[in-house]
Length: 394
Image (cartoon, rainbow, N blue to C red):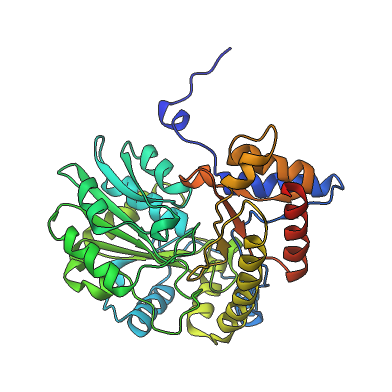
């Protein structure tokens, strides 16, 4: 018997980043020597005070359902975080806590997108944006920006992509996969364009807010264009800054009616995020923040080493980034000189098989001829990976 699957699920692809990470782990389990540079998660352990809060919650029996949108004390911590670090005055009913940043965006797409609605997504993009739009019966509109633009779209490009069908515009800064961040001036210029299209909602994905090399304050489009607040959703979470990827806690702040609709979607999918993880997330937001600086210092050192090392490999060009724990080098020169390798997908397979290095092809992020390399691993692993890559493409 052949089972006919829904068209919506056939229109989307599995997450490429998760697939690469899973394959690397499977090869390691088989005893093969593989250095995994695909995972988008810090290699640091979750700080002790956060783990202790979760253990205490278990011991106290805090293992039942909470409110769908998150326990009140965690929502209060999110409200305080937004006020303290971003200058935003959200009320508790404007906050939704979800099972990770991914669910926040999924909830948003399901809540606001109708068939035929267009969603403008700068490319390179996080792998899940277009597919979650497709699952909501929307149409992703990709706006491409290459290395010559530091992977950031221009106001003219944004304006050309917007029309009466545009329902949502996505901004991810600092960006996964490129590590690039929009300046306040650049965001102000994009905001000026968005004012001309009042129907379009805006989603600013700030998941890498704290992983930046510049010492100035973080800014998103709402900081520089506060008049856009009635149609802007701020998406964030504890996964990256506090090394809590597996805890699965993200949160969103925005217009009350949109948050209410997103909560309704969540109520019919996962219900509340895990109670224990919520306690841990509250401890992360309210507790000591020095763990962020420790990770940031290590990531910056690794970043500098990897960017320099990649640029020493013939056929590879890598821009320094503004933050995150990714670099996104152009590898077309390496592809062109390798027999039997015709694109970044085949290069990624070649490096996995020949060099034992797992990375993600740029095609998965909407820009061919590139690869994404995660620097969230030890300096020794990165040193060996660069040596292997240089040997394999030399």
